[in-house]
Image (cartoon, rainbow, N blue to C red; front, side):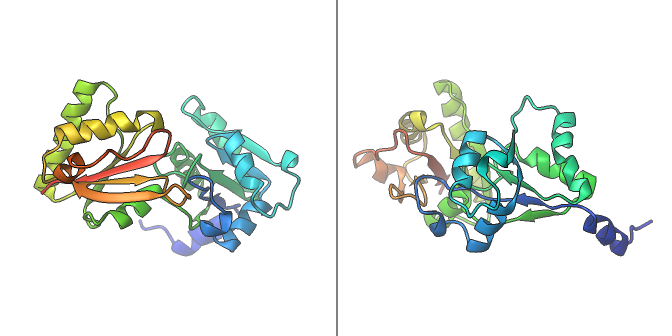
Length: 249
């Protein structure tokens, strides 16, 4: 039997909303990356679930706060937090209280542990509201010139050099076969090693985009073939958040 959409709407109207609010990708004025209404909504919430309380507080200091910062509850969500604990953090939604969800950078729940909170909110029947803000994945893809119709985001590649090389070649084969852009990130202090691996193990006609520090004053985005990258100095990537994207010919 199909559920009655009207009944679902009535049920959700009794709940508070889980607001998914993006934070910045680096040092840049908040007006450059978060709409005014999202700033107001963020500043009006008294409870947050965050990847890091420190980052959440730094973000909230940029918003027009309706409550003293010390009065805002911030729960830290990581892999060690049990579902029962996370459910207790979301319980105020059932009495009509709104809750905010933020990541350490960019959009919450995208390559981020906050996805667990969103899934549980849906199970509870609470409405979920995504707010517009920066996503390095989409911004990098937009600026890369690679295929934006077919793409895959892989998170992190293996750290061990042999396994990393094997994985890069596998992604390159998938890219060629499916005409699909491949996207992934790396821990900033390993960026240079990742770039070197890409140059060493990918084919010369594969196009590689390096998107560094997107939306910040250090933003730098460039797409070249592997052969072209080899003919010039390597970009300065150390300690800069960087998205790597490539597409095989």
